[in-house]
Length: 231
Image (cartoon, rainbow, N blue to C red; front, side, top):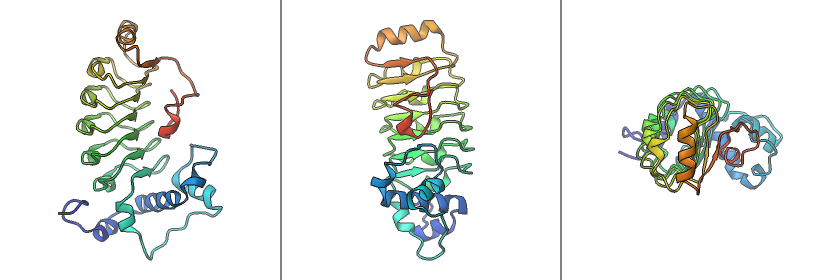
C-alpha cells in the first residue's frame, strides 16, 4: 500500500479525482510555482481559480495531458477557499500536507485528514463542520480556525500541545475546559460563543501568555494568514 491509500497508484488516484478537485490541485501547483508573485497578491479572498487568473493574467483552463499526479502528491499547501468542495477525500493521501485552507465551502467531515500527521495550519471558516474529532491525533497543528462553524466541543484538541492560535468565534462551544492545559496557546479568538464571562475571565487570569479576543474585528493578524476573516 502506498501513500495514496487503498493500494492505489498516484495515476489511479488522479483518475478517481473529480473535476472540482483537479482544478483546485492544478491551480495550487501553478500558484506554488509562482509563490513570490502570489505572496504579493492584494486580496486573501480569492478562489484558487481567481488567484491563478490574477497571478497569470489568464483564465484557468483545465489541461487533459501531462496531468501532474506525482507533483500533487508532494503538495504541502492546499487552498480550496470558496469552491464547490463538499469533502476532503482527495487529501487523504497527502501525507506531506502542512497547510489546508478550506473556508467558505460546504465541507462537513474532516475524517480524510486523520493521516495528515504533518498538518500545521487549518482553516475551516464558514463551513458545515460540526466535529473536530478527526484532528485528535494531529499533534503538529499550530493554527486552527473553526469560526462560523457548527462545532460544539474543543475536547479533541486537548492534546494538541503545539497549538498557538485558535479561532472559535460564532460557534456553539460552551467551555474552554478541554484546552485549559495548552500552555502553547498565544491567541484565542472567541467572539459570540456560549462560553460564560466568568470562564473567560478565569482563562485570562490563568493564561497570561494568551491574548483572548472577545470582540468582533475585521483586523485580525491571526485569521488573515489562515485564509479566513475575523472574528
